[in-house]
Image 1: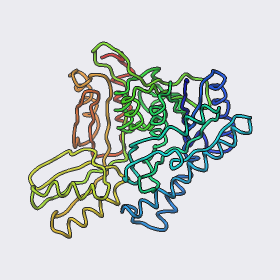
Image 2 (image 1 turned 135 degrees about the horizontal axis):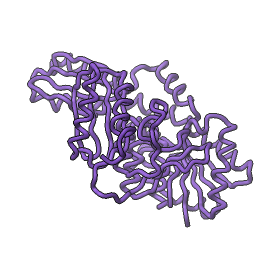
Image 3 (image 1 turned 90 degrees about the vertical axis):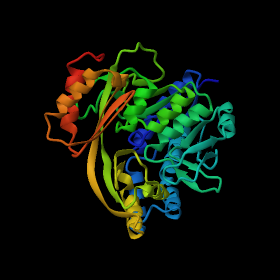
Length: 404
């Protein structure tokens, strides 16, 4: 059978009127003889409220015990939306039932707040589809082998949707959002940014992991691994969106987009003995601190980029290391990254030249540069990087062919 997975983000299901309007999306696929699985996020603003409630009661949400309760609380947002969406479908005589992670089950590891899916039992979903029932699955969450609820991290409903599509060998996974697709830059920042009709998994993975929030990078990884075509599409307009899939192109370098990330910090750690570097790293991992990049490694000094969301946990880890005399001190600075993404751009020196030319116009200090197959990322000592992004887009995309 042909299966379509439809995922609706928080802004799409922000209120009951919007949920009711989305029923037509499901009905259209049913009328096309497809079986439909719906995955939903929490209604817009609900997760932030739940996070606030948790922090009001306990400010130390970085231990396994507190994070387990944190996950349990946050999961309630998607559970509510799934039930409301199922009710909306039933109102239009579409057989439907809400499903939650523990009922399926969607098994994850024990890494609370950033869990990884390890297995999905598809039997219940498959049986419901055969009976003509539309499963409405609460995204963003799973369950461990110890029957504890986990969450997959911010934007985790995208991961749930693509994982379900992969497990059931779906024809396609549609990610419904409130943008028209994937653009060469943030269209709110750069109105002339161009929309891509198609984009490769590799390019989308780089954009998503470097700040573009149209889809979670782990969802793209999942789609790439299991060859699931993904479409990013506006929930309330008639555009065709952007399809993410393998695309065969010639080898000329091609710029796909410019993105930025201001939700990162630079931690400079002064170590008593370089032999203890890996002890420092392991202690950070103990507190679930994600290490995004090591930008500087010198004698008795190392600089590490971590997500802003891990600030509290990292401070706890570093304070303990300082008390144990493993590190002398540490400094935390707000920074930002700007990235140019595209196919094989690493191999074209003219792209590097244009990037450096643009950066020279601004009073910025470059803290690190990373050049990979499909992207060039620069860490800068300032966070108001939007003018830099606009200038890069102007030079690399707006006033040039998309092929360099």
